[in-house]
Amino acid sequence: MFDKLFELGEKPYSADDAAWDEFVLNHPNGSLLQLHNWARLKNRFGWSSHRVWLKKDGRLAAGAQILYRSAAMGIAKIGYIPHGPLVDWDDEEQVTVLLNQIDHSAYQRGVGLVKMEPLLWSHATPNWAAYCQQHGLSPETDTIQPPRTLMVDIQGSDDDILAAMHQKTRYNIRLSARKEVEVRAGSRTDLPVFYKLMQQTGQRDSFGIHAPEYYRDVYDLFAPDQLTLLLAEYEKRPLAAVMIAAVGKTAVYLYGASSSEERNRMPSYAVQWAAIQWAKQRGCTHYDLWGVPDADEETLEASFQERSDGLWPVYRFKRGFGGQLWRTVGPADRVYNQRIKSLYNWWRKRG
Image (cartoon, rainbow, N blue to C red; front, side, top):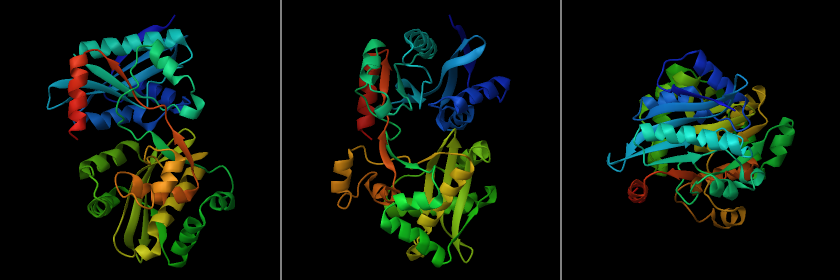
């Protein structure tokens, strides 16, 4: 049997938070989005949070950090478990008890549905549809995190990693060095520079960005333990920057930006190569480029030169780094109120 324990995610850092983070960091499906500081971040930007878990023999065995907010113009309240729950899906008792914990948390908050997006890779989880059917989860729903990514194996030597890249990407990395682009680790004082680059990138490539306070809080909460800021410069002028996070053996490309100037110097390639070096020094085995269009490889390769909507432009860039196309099992909803579910679907379709 499991001991059923609850804890409010809004509580200040405590020994319980440390135990939770240790559990997440050592879990095979652990993610930055389940660390307690991710809940603290979201608490500052319109979400509340609650954490549930199971203990067995005095140790954490499973759990979920749930984010809550009102949607559909405040009419519907939803829950969201990014990259969770963390549970052994082959253990029917464990899954059942944890879902009951999630249900209780949702009921206390008057929530109509809880959306979960576990960090389970489809090639390693062939029974996902059966799990959903067995436990009353609805997998036919929308995604919040991009389910498909390119995963770069960085276990070999630098020469091995470069050899796996497309020739043009490998050339651009070396060209950036010849064109005197230098990459350095940034600090908190560089965040205004990073945000200015984000603004330029968003305007140029037509995508929305967070408020400057969001990137500041991400940095403050996760650097230096899980996150670094890297800047590519030419003659001390910032040309590109990335925020990279590492959890377990995987480093993740969280945010990236570049200037519209000096693009012929290939600073974006230089900073990504530096990110791979940082990840290797951290002991990571894989570098997750996080987010490409949700299509199979044949479709991606046939269409990337013509498509410019959504994540297609970033796929053109990311594909050159030689990663393998991986996909998570996708989202699943725990629906408690079908009317709220319908209202949520309508709201999401409105964009």
